[in-house]
Image 1 (cartoon, rainbow, N blue to C red):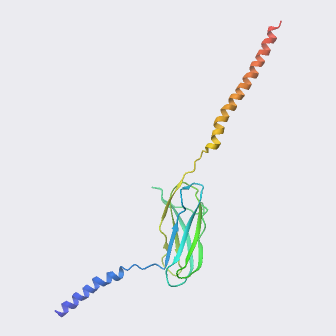
Image 2 (cartoon, one colour):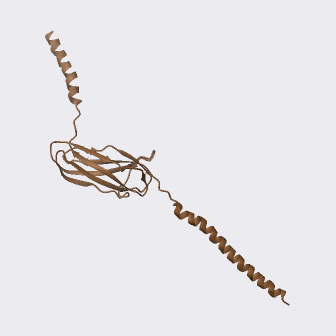
Image 3 (cartoon, helix red, strand yellow):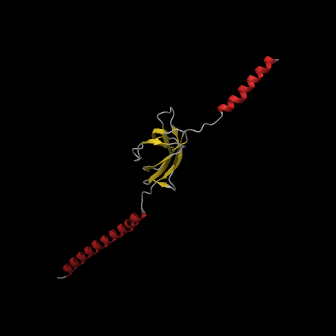
Length: 188
């Protein structure tokens, strides 16, 4: 009976306490976030994303590498985007981040193509085996209107008027020549 009781107590301990210990959520020492620019984004705009890196640990962090990643989220055409085309800033290095300290940085990007996109901020700590990545921020880039009515309306109205004016001018000159020719013929 004593043996059965010890065996039951061992199983109870394993099944109750081990999952509770493994279920504890450890707060990562680095927390990273990125915030999108306010308002609608249009092709040709220069969008500025606000990135933050927070040291939630108890030790100084040194030599952190922080970089932006951009992906196309167009259905059926999902792929990473080359940031060089978008004139986005390259990776930065944070020399030192004290416990409780936040490093903030603006990441600007020229929006060269309309569509659906996602952006993340990644932090690599040389002492860790896994990088920390922010949540994916989804955003849409609206197409830029190709036709500016302020430039088209004057042309759309002006061209026909110029054609009519020139037609009338040449028609009038032609009629004058004809009348002059007819007068010369009428004189005997």
